[in-house]
Length: 327
Picture 1 (tube, rainbow, N blue to C red):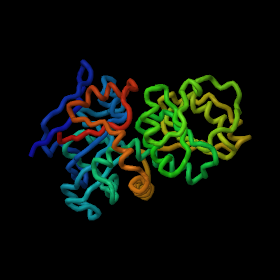
Picture 2 (picture 1 turned 135 degrees about the vertical axis):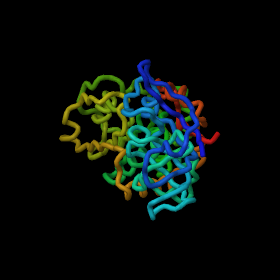
Picture 3 (picture 1 turned 90 degrees about the vertical axis):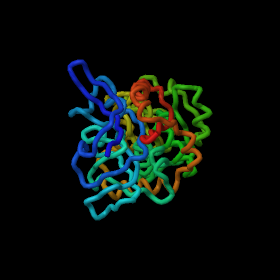
Picture 4 (picture 1 turned 30 degrees about the vertical axis):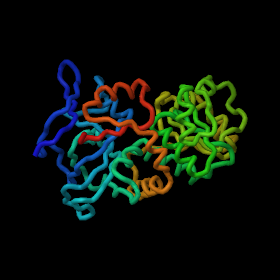
């Protein structure tokens, strides 16, 4: 049986990506074989597909850091043929072949049963970005969201879009940060009640503490913007940091932490315990308005991926790109 996959290969001239026909025996060894239905396009996917290939160590390689589909064969008693499943994290699509393929073979420990109320397409409209958003929102909840608006930076991206929709569905006042004024209608449609121009938070920190403004924050940018936001948090408020698009350096002082008790919560979606993953997916199915989720979706096919990988690295992609691997 043959199936199609996007394969990235490397030679002396660099890397190249192409859709190829493959045989099942080329898949990595693992306990569960999944008939993949959908995957997504994330920043890491762009890095894997692109000419640098910085996240990939072994070629040929099939990118795609998440997928949803149906179990086709299983050597693990927890999963049976016909079960609907979703996978995010565990370096799938980086160190292990991933979701840009009509078939995938992965470890059973990496999978989560698809929660009731979500289709496989909806699960990938959420994807790694939305799963990460839910982890961030849960972290804010666990530490107590304060009275002021919750700030979401990088709000038009995959993580930010879902965070805005989730927080709005929870009844929170949401302030969305974007550098693109044309995205205001999109963000308000997701539930943002206030739009904050990125330029307002782009200045270098002049004072370690500013007026207490935000009751919580999901930060998908990092860098200088995160440093600026820390000084604007309410006393005891938390920032759930999930991204490094603005850089890994944090030009801040300890003053927001010492004098205002601000919590900086690091969110990593890669190595999450099974219980955390199940809880997050169940909350997504419960909270996320499906009509808002649909508004975020940009459909794609395997053949579209090389161009989309370049676009996401250049910040040209809005919302959630859902890849129908069988289209």
